[in-house]
Image (cartoon, rainbow, N blue to C red; front, side, top):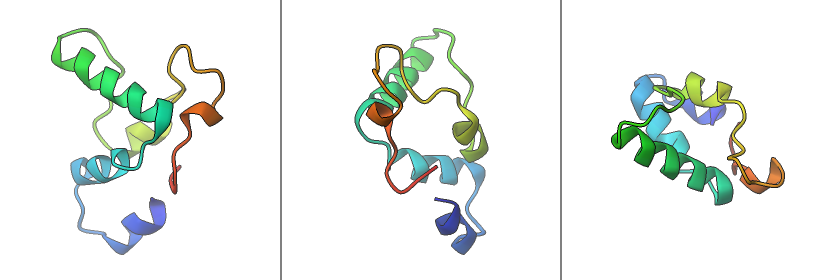
Amino acid sequence: MEQYFRQKPNLSDEAKLDHAVMYLVDDAKLWWKTRMEDNFAGRPVLEINNWDDLKGAKPLVPPGARTRQGARLIRTL
């Protein structure tokens, strides 16, 4: 993702986040979907507003995932 973003220097932080979450797979995608649903429902969630926030989100392993590999990201972090 970092290489892609270096080639697209005019992308806003919001656009970078939108691009990055498109590459989430498996448990990481489920974690993001659940996070978004909780946010829309008004439940407290980890605030992630840009690419740097997403990179720093610890852990990207949702509760119940057995391993970090179970929540892997393809071509990313």
